[in-house]
Image (cartoon, rainbow, N blue to C red; front, side, top):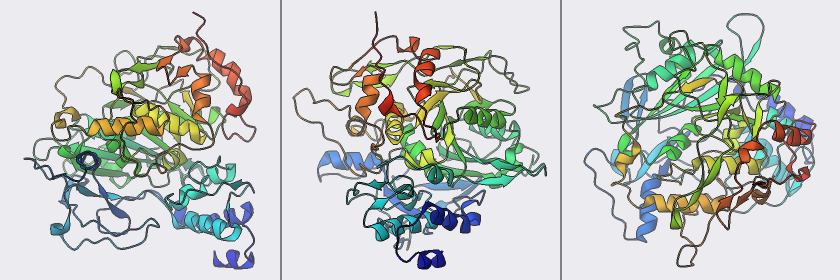
Amino acid sequence: LNKILHDNDNSPLTEKQEQEMLQISHDELNEFPISIGTDNTSHNWETIQHPGTEALQYHSKGNFHPLKRKRATASELVGVLSGKKMNALRGGHDTTNANGTGNNNNSGSDNIEEGYMRVPKFWDPLPYRIIADEREQRSGKNEGSDGGSDPPPPTDLPRDGVRRYLGNFGSRLMTPAEAKSIGSRIPSSQNDGALLETIFVAVASYRDWQCPQTVESAFSRASHPERIRVAVVDQIRFGRDTPCSIPPGGPCEENPNQATCKHLSQIDYFTVDADLSVGPVFARHLGHRLYRGEYFAMQSDAHVEFVQRWDDEIIEQWHTARNEMAILSTYLSGVEKHIDLETGERTSKSRPIMCASDFEGYGDMKHLRHGQQPEGVTYIHDMPTLNPFWAAGFSFGRGHFVVNVPYDQHLPWIFQGEEISIGLRGFSYGYDYYSPEKAACYHYYGRDNVPMFWENSSIYRGSGDYGMNRLNAIIRMATPSRNGKSKEWIRTDELKYGIGRVRDLQLFFDIFGIHVKEQTVEKHLCRFVGRPMQKEFIPFLRTNEMGLDYDRITYRYVDKE
């Protein structure tokens, strides 16, 4: 690396030189699987403030007093790997700075501040940071390897190297070379010479007894389980709930032939005291922190059944989109009438598409959210079906999606609205959403007596207002409160979890008939999504396969009724 930099004589790096630098680091960037490990005192971990505590502290304007709860303290984050309970992950408020350097002050559990917790840092390999730093130092501006320059970034932008390399926090669209540099491949276990694209599967679970079966079916029904890495954020009550790390057929010591047991090195269980749960957004945020450079990134709920050969099928469908920025995402159909639970074979060809959304709620809490989506057999078979919206229950795309658009750390108590947030942020970075023709898994609906995170409502009462205010402000959908004043919201990491500059959100609102000021939508959008949208939009797919060029799309949806 030093030789390439020295020989270049301080001239701006060329794309070829950057790719040579990454090729030199091939073994590091292609390592699989990489575990988060159990040593929370290492430099790969950091201390963050719990978002519920953060919101309550913001609300109290300096008069905040830590909440005293019967079951656990807010500082406790417990790591459980392979069913073995580790010590409570406690540490002082560390001194890590924006560059990712510094020391974690972990001298003992007595140093922890109420409301802080230890978590893995986001994936950020050194080679990307070196290239990003060299770009800035050599050019005096923020150039990408395509030669185009970015506007100077705000001074408070985080220094994450991989995100600066990948378009500088959405300042510009990634180049094909930058995008394709992300993602590990491994040799097939079948010794056929094939290189397999790896898959990261993030599962957020709240006291969910079906979580172990979800993990088991992900491995047991995959064509190539060796390429899959599962990361579970397991929110449980210790002593009352069975951890997700205990396979459905019992502990591995008693039943080692389970697929989960055969692939333990490819699973991370990040276990959190259920008292710390403030909704799916924070749980999935923790899940995104567990990504470690896999080629594809996927997320699902903790109560799904995977179909046979799901990995081969979903990868093949992604490739048929011929779009590096494609994200396959949809609400999942239920297991009934769609999958044979004994064999894992699919029994139905119908699937939902993401096209129905409207404003709901009242007063200051009114917001846009997805409704019940129409389901049927697709008429489009040569590629996935384009649709406007992203769904949290199932998402599959390139690994750089979760690098560029991670879940926001500062959205406590959000359940309705997370999909609009991720969807619009992804759109602004240049990503496109599709419904797959064939589902990779099916969902268990209508479950009775299943605990929900709402049982913590008395602990974090009032924090949700600040979460929703922040969500709407960041995605440009905030409206004045009833007294005419701007709503208060937490601005921490606004740019890190904010909107990119590749596409303007107003363009999205205009094209799909969303009237933010009036808080209304053009009805019957589902009549357009499908073959009409496919015919209208696909011609604007960039020739370098880096997403749809929305600046060339003149179509505007209007409900003719």
